[in-house]
Image (cartoon, rainbow, N blue to C red; front, side, top):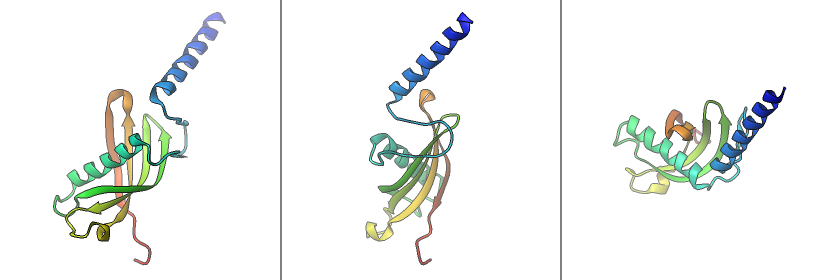
Length: 129
């Protein structure tokens, strides 16, 4: 009985330390809205998604540059998954604002392993198209 209480206490302390070290309020299970879309870490994740997508596509066709973020959600599942709606311009088009499009990117981050992976990335169709 005493060892079970000690084990439960250690687990609680480790969970609190991990949350405090991370600095973000992340809930386990299901998608949760990102509280602050301008959080530098969330913007870094968005820029990572754009960079990875650009590396995987034709260089001339898709040189995407971060413009803003319209929506963001996180889910804890073997790391933190970020599902972000990212506004980006294509730097190969002369008028960057003319090329503004929105994309949904899903990134898996395992911060304790210094690991990030782009899981999916797709353009969001413009209204009227």
